[in-house]
Image 1 (cartoon, rainbow, N blue to C red):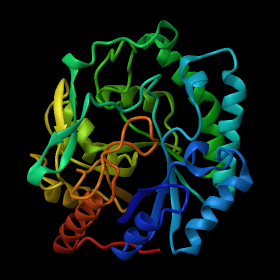
Image 2 (spheres, rainbow, N blue to C red):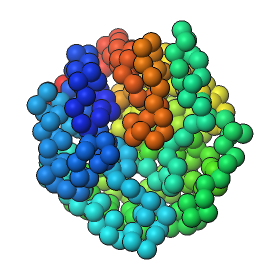
Image 3 (tube, rainbow, N blue to C red):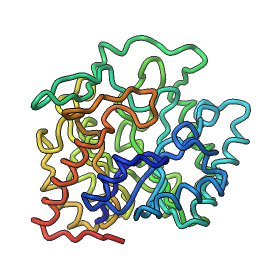
Length: 332
């Protein structure tokens, strides 16, 4: 397996240095202009410069994650979506040219992953985020709303256009579930809220470029059997990326936890993934904010749950599980 970390696309001395010191050699980044200070990665020179900057300090830029530019026109099906899809296609070609083979993406319109609180006290006064559906009843503006049927149409339109380009470029598009997996949310339809939805996508696009980000906490909140579901999809070679975190509660009311402090059997699952052939990239997802850090917000790009200390703990925990289970790590 390959341990990765989601890192800012612009040099961050503390985060980048600490990641290298704990043995992380593979970076995932979100290269949107507001974070990178550069043009979006449909600009080849921009993406190459980000890749080179990571390389200069010892990282392999393994993949991109999230919306790399404003995707609202595509997700809402606005009049100018074709020009933005063309830019997305060019980004895929650029990634292929530079050897960046993983693109983790989502199709959450108007509101991305979402929590109602970010200051819930966890073990030792660490802070985590929480979602409570009762506190998420305020609606977005009318122009930001979309129903599930239209969103499915827009996803199909998008994938019809971009998956063939990804296939040709050698890039695997790894679809992330909606977080939280409920619909509607704040008046917005959500469609990737069950394993059945991913089967629907696969039936329409049964090609190797169409992959899944197995975010185990989100699928857990769907009440899916993580062992059975991941075994089936791994045997079908559909999972190419793991997100590891844990939660307590149900999809209508839950909070994040430390990686060792929830009910998910992390060690058993990692051994299970290896048993079924997974040897690709994984990363610790949201982690608690620990002493001396400040919790992020949901308008900062790399938002709540993305400070470094909790990720350091998580990577040490994951490495220990892998070593104990005899699961080898790829360094290059």
